[in-house]
Amino acid sequence: MTPFPLTWLYVPGDRPHVVAKALAAGADVVVIDLEDAVAPDRKEYARTATAERLREPQTVPVHVRVNALDGPWAAADLTTLAALPGVSGLRLPKVTSPGQIRQVAVTTPLPLYALLESALAIEHAYAIAGAHPSLRGVSLGEADLRADLGVRADAGLDWPRSRVIIAARAAGLPPPPQSVHPDIRDLDALAASCAHGRTLGFLGRAAIHPRQLPVIERAYLPTHAEIEQAETIIKAAATTEGAQALPDGRFVDAAVVAAAQRTLSLARRG
Image (tube, rainbow, N blue to C red; front, side, top):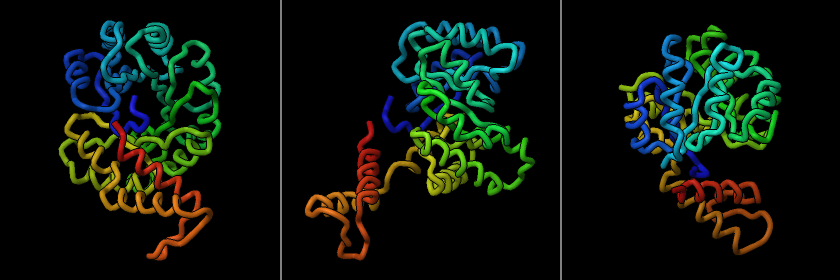
């Protein structure tokens, strides 16, 4: 997997032909969904079809979103998927406590990713993020969280968004990707939403249609101006020791240099 995945394409696990198309769509990570995208009477088929697809290593990293850990299907999901060569990670929905992460971690060596989708999960965000070394990331499930909080305006989710970003970084995890943008036709709105998410500290975004992928990637890759600025900072830092001010007045210290290095690394990804 690229060290800076920006696009995470969700696809229903009970539609193998759509999964095949998703694997060729150019996403950094494909997420086969056994949970929200699959009706209850299709759960068994979705699990079987997913296991058949992932019996061999894939050319694209594939994660599987299992069913809710406190529900009737999760145990079979985990048992079936844990040892398959084509699975690169498990996404655990509706996590509310660190104990849930630890419970799953003892059953599989796979990297785990927690989805925080309720007020209780937000309250426990840092404890969840630091629950176990197998946990490699946390992110929001905004549809469920919106319903739990009774939030109507999008801005009402900015505090929990920031809370999860801070919890992830405090626990030493990568910045979370944004939750999905549900309107697959309004790409201008998607771009604006990504721009806002980037200002909050997200890195990349989940998608539900391939047409969303290039919009997300453009929004999260550094601009030419940002790359030039980062190169200027790195060059200035190489010529002297300690903090300094650039000719245009910008102050450069170790934190600014580290941010510039991240920008250049992201620009070079892939």
